[in-house]
Length: 265
Image 1 (cartoon, rainbow, N blue to C red):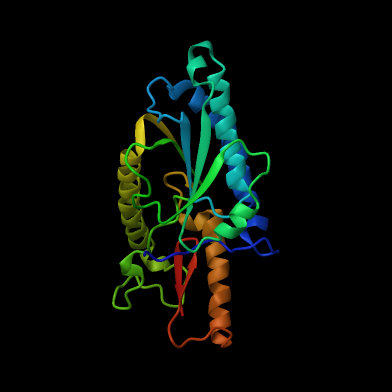
Image 2 (image 1 turned 90 degrees about the vertical axis):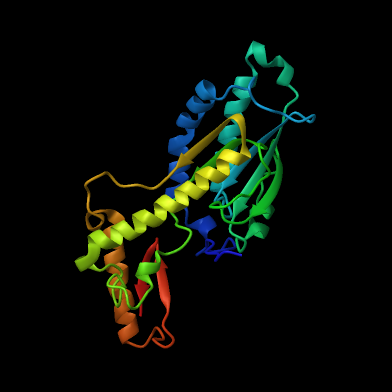
């Protein structure tokens, strides 16, 4: 199995479930865009359905809720609106199945315990990395992923090699090699996106639809001038201070991941 880095489990004060307001805002902001995409781009006449007339939805990087439930509800409501059109009366008996995907170590117990009681779909969990194949060929009608794809499958090898000039010794980000570090991350992102898209191309039915919401920054803006860049510098300096105070064990060497940035002690 690939390395697994799930969000904080449970529903306690420090859990993802209680600390994902930003991600919730992204889901809310994308609602109208999803409605529009399904209305304009999803051609139900072209889709392949089995004998059960089941519309298959996959949410990739679902974590433990509640944001995934909101996103799924938005998708289903948009499809139901489309089904009200006169030329789709033969699909009036359609049912929905939602496939919730995340890392193997994701807290699926909390996810399923918090499923909405009034949901209009059948639920199933699919563990594994979305950078690989997860579903049989031509079985998905709609693929959704919100605020997940900016997480890479792994840290670029140059950044964790002590013999590499890009090794981030005692810093969350080496200013001297900002360009080279960015290129290393960019290369890994390109490989991951290629794997992701190739996998989904096989899993989607002809005429299926995929909606991706991803974290990004405008072209030409240095990472150091973005909110995450400033945060990385602050957290990095705090971790260095903790290491110097022996609050973090320096032996053996550890790697701490801050939103895709590597800090080494």
